[in-house]
Image (cartoon, rainbow, N blue to C red; front, side, top):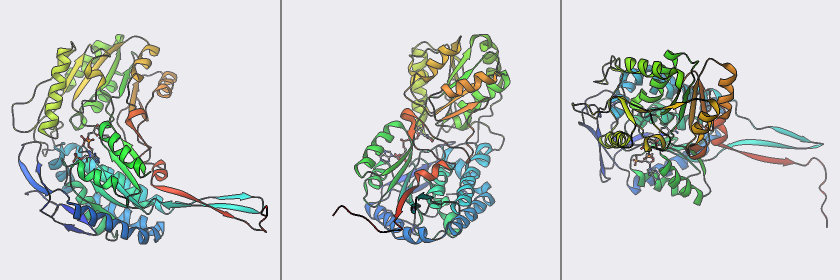
Amino acid sequence: MTYPTQPTASHFINGAYVEDDTGMPIDVIYPATGAVIGRVYSATPAIIDQALRAARNAQAAWAAMTGTERGRILRRAADIMRDRNHDLSVLETYDTGKPYQETSVVDATSGADALEYFGGMAATLTGEHIQLGEDWVYTRREPLGVCVGIGAWNYPTQIASWKGAPALACGNTMVFKPSETTPLCALKVAEILHEAGAPAGVYNVIQGLGDVGAALVADDRVDKVSLTGSVPTGRKVYAAAAAGIKHVTMELGGKSPMIVFDDADVENAVSGAILGNFYSSGQVCSNGTRVFVQSGIKEAFLTRLAERLKGAVIGDPQDPATSFGPMVSERQLGIVEGYIANGQEEGARLVYGGKRLAKDGFFIEPTVFADVTDDMTIAREEIFGPVMAVFDFDDEDEVMARANDTEFGLAAGVFTRDLARAHRVAAGFQAGTCYINTYNDAPVEAPFGGSKLSGVGRENSKAAIAHYSQLKSVYVRMGDLEAPF
Ligand code: NDP
């Protein structure tokens, strides 16, 4: 490998890099060129066991530390992450192909935000006191134990941090398995946490495909599973976790609506549609890929959208001027090309892009379809690529019914200058994360997650604490105890 800060082995277990090259080799491919830039080895059963043993052995002592002590370590890790933002962003760009222009402001920075936020919260975690006459009950907020994190490939640093930070703040330990497509960045999160003072075994990373994830989920030593991935994987992981009655957080896919009313500011609505469809080359779970545009604003919207898309700088993602990078893999590119062909076959009007770029790497143009109808495949299935579908609508009731007519419920957005309508529409959305006159913000202070098939549980914010801890009730009798015999 020729880039800075490369991890030195495949796994990070018990405070150190660990290699076991008897595992299946996994090539790391730079999406901008298709070149192999590294290799890791899938975790063998021995590596899986080593990681779970390390996490299990470390958990009691980690939980026994005060919240202030645990939080200090997390906040120190946040500082290290911010200090190394440049190198971590370069690595994230090699791992995912996302432009440095994005990775330098979104990935390690939001990972650091999570470490700082939950680091600050660790010392504030308490139970409560419930008075019952003379007697009383108190609750203890306790960790769950060993948590498994399984990540998708679009935000490898962020996902590893968003799961690790609240888990560790609550006194759990973690074994994290990144997507095999982007195996590098989570290793740096583990390295930084260890350098910041996290004891050996508190945060471990092992590589592998779905079979390694499945082995982790099925293991009796695991108390909780947090998955970021697709709905089909979510179904499998949820079912496997249910066998052991394990806690779960499921951050799954989406096909989110974005509604643009006639009275919206056109420039802002176009900005929202660009952010909600083409950021990270469209590989964002919460993207607003069904853009409903009211008839009075349709022509203005499509005209400005096409003009602004011409401003996308597509090319070398390490160049800070580049604003649109490749897809993560040849496979994902093929999936996106298949959906574009399908959109044309089913009669949608291609108004922008649609073609693979004649260059190395997995580049495809930002693509817009207009005149999309609700029954088309591109209107119903998650594409997970830069393909926007624009729909026409006339009135609010009609568009709300259509916006909610989906099995997904991750996110939804509305653009309008009418304050009452904005809040009415937000209340009516069947989605976990909603936006008014903006799209795809994800600050650590706010809960993030989906409803319907898009998932269960919430990441970030105070809400995440409930998903990484459990309450124990302790009943205290002050007087004598009566019994029937
Ligand atoms: P996948 O569902 O294919 O994979 C997710 C992770 O699960 C990967 O690490 C994968 O390993 C692993 N995995 C696969 N099968 C199993 C199994 N049986 N047991 C345990 N683990 C398994 O998702 P992608 O990586 O393709 O990511 C894209 C999807 O993720 C999209 O649907 C997107 O919407 C969703 N996503 C959701 C987000 C959210 O917060 N709601 C955020 C980001 C993405 P491997 O890849 O090595 O096979």
